[in-house]
Length: 356
Image 1 (cartoon, rainbow, N blue to C red):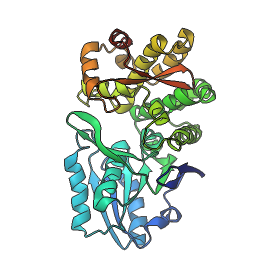
Image 2 (image 1 turned 180 degrees about the vertical axis):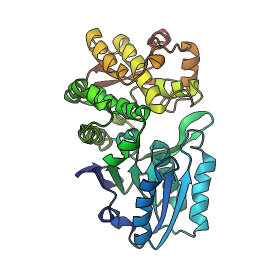
Image 3 (image 1 turned 45 degrees about the horizontal axis):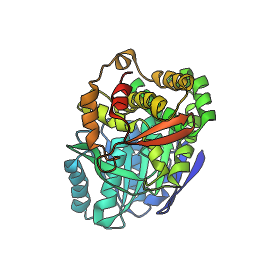
């Protein structure tokens, strides 16, 4: 087991990375606590039962809330359902929430914890590769609004994160590629050596049963920590982590949050952001080819052949929460491992970047 310390201004906490972490010794935080376990209803029952057994034995009061993990359900009504459960059980400000699921469950649980009685503790058990390297680190919590993704939320750091490789065994191929797109993103903007490692090992990682995942996940978490520790609330360098996201969130809206998964949308968005980088950040064309080649490894032919209406996509970017006033901000790259932020890019350059 590896322990990665996350340092932010509001809280320091550990992310445990390894195998077979769902054991009693890692759940001392629940001792004599009022505990609510919020789980993705798609997780295998055997794994849920293992966590429930431990928490029931340790807690003074325990309840499980099973929820559907879809973008449509990442809503005010689901947030209210969590709050209702807490209030119906009579939970106090000293209660503890556990999130067991992917990014949607982690985000909603975190936001519920941030808002219940002005803030309670929560612990994450991320069960998808994407949530293990993204939603579990950094304290971004949110729900969606009908006019935009993750528009209602708060920065609220977890107390602990249990990142168990055992959950990867039950993932579908699409969920693996979603997570790999985020790992690739961290390498592109932050670490050239890790990028080269991914180039050399991507085919084995795509086999989904690779022994390389523990290293890839740990390295990705460490890279994200190096940014979050400097900029917890995204006033500066944390914006780099939005590489591909201005395009990506618009792509999710373009597909009505059904056609594209978050990882697919961000991967497509990174291709577009790389195109934009050539024109706005002087990215070398040969380097851009390398970057795009690696990103394309996690996208299928159907996605790569998708044609977008660039003007419609640009219109959907207008609701992006990362803009400044009416000015859209794009994260680009000057080279591998060196991010850049472009404000008020030329409209024609943005539109031409959409061509994959």
